[in-house]
Every structure is written in structure tokens, then in C-alpha cells.
Amino acid sequence: MSGEITAAFHMADVRNKRITRRRAVAVGELLAGPQAYPLIVQRRLPKGDALLMAEVAGLQGAKMASALMPLCHPLPLELVRIHCEPVPERHAIRVYCECASEARTGVEMEALAGVNAALLTLYDLSKPVEPALEISAVRLLFKEGGKSGLWLHPQGISANERKRFAPKLPQGLPGTRCAVVTLSDRASQGQYSDQSGPCLAQGLQSLGGELVSQQVLADGIEPLAGHLHELAAQGVGLCLCTGGTGLGPRDLAPEALQSLGGRRVEGLAQMLRTLSAQHTPLAWLSRAEVVQFEQMLVIALPGSPRAAAQCLDILVPVLGHAVAMIDGQGHP
Image 1 (cartoon, rainbow, N blue to C red):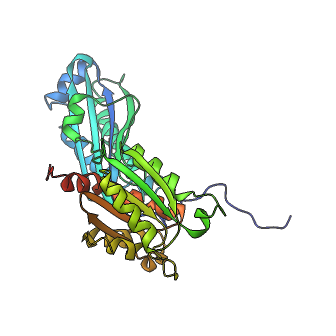
Image 2 (image 1 turned 30 degrees about the vertical axis):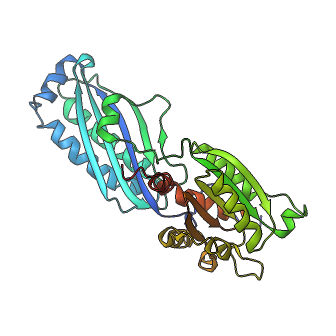
Image 3 (image 1 turned 180 degrees about the vertical axis):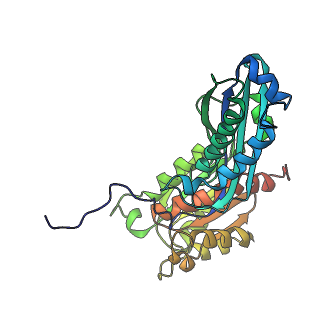
């Protein structure tokens, strides 16, 4: 039999994913029973201090995740923290592992590996006293970073866990009047259906923004500049424009924003190019522009739906805070 044989598994290709701050917290329990539990808590087990050794084992387990799981990417962990919490009403030890890194993929497996290593070590040190031990309720508590942002386990998170780990949601856009403008000669003439505008509109609404305007305009300086004057007069606080940021003769969105005479926000524009370049080197050809015009933040993004969505993902961690500052709310 001839032909190429392909493997039935593969490591995920993350080369085109963007490097972001990632964090994950996993949790699990050892049900130690009435005999072993007090000895664990009092650090009097025959083999030694199980709680201290569990912390060491958890650290090592998290760092060895990629060696234990063949398809797990090796990551440079910047934080591994193990916390063991006695639960006297169940004679249990609840173990948490918190991991963090700046990477292209998440640290969930590292956190889970850390919890399991700590629990197995507690089991090993406790079994001479009580063989009827049980490891249970191992799960990911939450993860942060990447495209999905904050994810919480459906079983929820307790008030104490929320206080200890402080999972962070990006500052949203509640109550912010938002607008989306698509710049395209062909789309404005009905030659094709706009996809980038609806994508941005949905993204703004998911952040709590109030979408008050969504328009498709022809390329050029005056159509956009005139429309932005109207939006500012209507009290719009944030306008996302898509299209017209390339090097073509009709790509004039940056010039339209600059004609408003507002304040350029060069840091945001540079952030868009720098972080988008992790997806594609073509990002360096973008002339993305950001301007504060009166009380409105105007951002010119690329025209392709994928690039526009990626740029909005890049902006999410700072967008709400930027709009709040323009509105005079200052720093949190």
C-alpha cells in the first residue's frame, strides 16, 4: 500500500496567534478523612510536612506540563503559585495552582498539572495513615488572556476565590454611544456586502456599548470627515472606522481623521500596528490612525473583516479606559 501516512494527532499551530498576558487558576481537593486530615493540618504525618511538600511538587508539576503531555506547548512560566486550604467540615485539603505567562497559548494545562502534582503528593504522604483517600473536583477555575478574554467555569467562583485571585474583566463600554463607519467605494455602491462593519458593531455591543449609527460611505476625505462632525454633534463617544487605511490612491481615512483638527493618539495607532504584526507582517503597511475629536474617540482600522476583528481584540483591554478618560472620569 503506497501513499503518505499522516498522524492521527498534531500539536496546535499557534504561530499566527498574538502574544498576550495569560493566567489560569485550577483547583482540586484531597478528601483525607478524619484520621489523616488533622495530621496533615498539624504537619505531623510520618513522612513529614505534606502541605509544604505539596507546594514544592505543585511548582514542579506546573513547570513539567509539556513533558507530561506530548501535545502541550512548552511555555516560559512567569508565575506559579500553589495554595493549600484546609476544609475542616469535609476533612479535605483544597489545592489551588495559579500560573501566568506572556505567550501565544494559554496556561490552563500548567495550572491543572500543578494541582494534580500537589494532590498526588498529599495522597502519597497521607496513605500510610489512611489508604481510603480520594482526589476529586479537579477543574479549571478560570483563565484570562488571549482572544476569549476572561472565562469562568460554569460551576462559578466563590467570594473568597474572587477576592484571592481577582479575575479581571476588561473595562467595558456601558452607556457609551458608539458608531461604526465602513469606507468602501464598492460597498457603498452595492457591489458587495459589508462584513467588517457588522463585525465591529457586534463587538462594541458585546462590550456594553450603545450602537447609535452604522454607515457605509464612499472612500475619500470629505464623506468621512463630514459624517464624523455629525456624530460628534450627536454625542457619540466612540467611532470605529474600517477601510481606507492602506496605500491605495483612495485610501484616505487617516487624512480624513487628521482634517478634523483633533488630538492624535499615536500610542494606540502604534499599538495596533505592533500587535497586529504578530498575526501578519502586512500590518506594517497599515496607516491605522486614532484621533480624539471633541469628546469622541475615532479609530481608523483595516478594511478586511479578519483584520478589523483582530484590531478590536487588541483594543479591548484599553478601550473602555480611554473613553472614560475622554469623558473626564480619570484613572480608576
